Image (cartoon, rainbow, N blue to C red; front, side, top):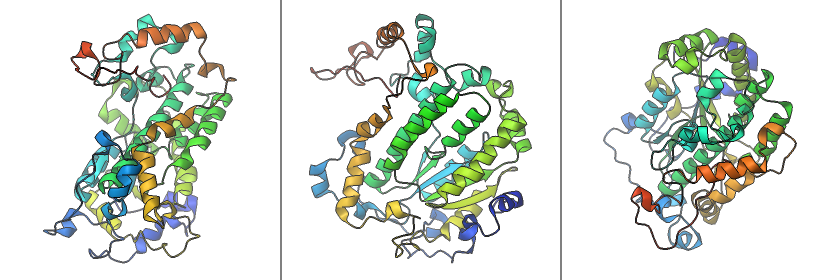
Length: 403
């Protein structure tokens, strides 16, 4: 049941694992700023927060930082919580319930619709018949149907880019509003999928090398989450849940074999969870038969996130121990205003992996067709063909996420 760490996992990691340290934490107290509190615990107590800064509309630069400080916005619930788990584990429902109880923003896992559905709702996949094969769309459904397709490597890198972009948005939200975020999966755990795909021969050794070059060049720019919650499911439970939610591309796929799901589980537990637990608190629950969100909230309320504050050599929560107010403002500028700079770090000059390359003619054809679609001539808000009024000065829309 929820709240109990699976015995198999404890044996795999070791009985003295830090994964279990939160279970022995002291009871939470509302007056302690280091501990998250749910709305049930707070009762009628109203949380007073500064008015959220509209970072999406106004950005946040040096001038704004002189007048609008950052640390004053942060309280005990200004945290990032990542919900992890295998396919069909029940992450979305749990994350929604958790975000509601903690009064945090819920962010779903990234998907390729974030690229292929443009801001006006037009599905760019309709353009595929006009495009060269190497430039056509390739999403999760395509992967389930044809996991040996040459575009699988490109799909994996784009998913990492999307999760990276979305996590930047989560950081910007916390620092600009003070509201915490519950996010499904993260760029830190994305490597689990890359390694599982590689082991089963769905991406090449060269593509794996490019993925790790990109990851090495980008991941250190992000502040790590405060808490990771892993919803553990046995392989048989995952297969039953895939069958129960009855998505045709999953049910009919030959990808989700016992071996594939087991390797994903091992990559999660022996690599990602072990690594992230050095930096963040970790809670693991057997979610094979579901669980109670209230139990998880009670466990979260017991965690003292500031217990390592005086140990400057301890890596846990180190990203969130900033000594000066200006350090907080700089991070807020970085994530709320300079996201485009961070996304440029994905431009790694690697030309030795054929499945990640396009010839010049195909690229030219792609550009002509892609930007002729409804709402793609200019940036969002400046396309007269979609009813926008915009300004007189118009800017050509940028290619999104490596398209």
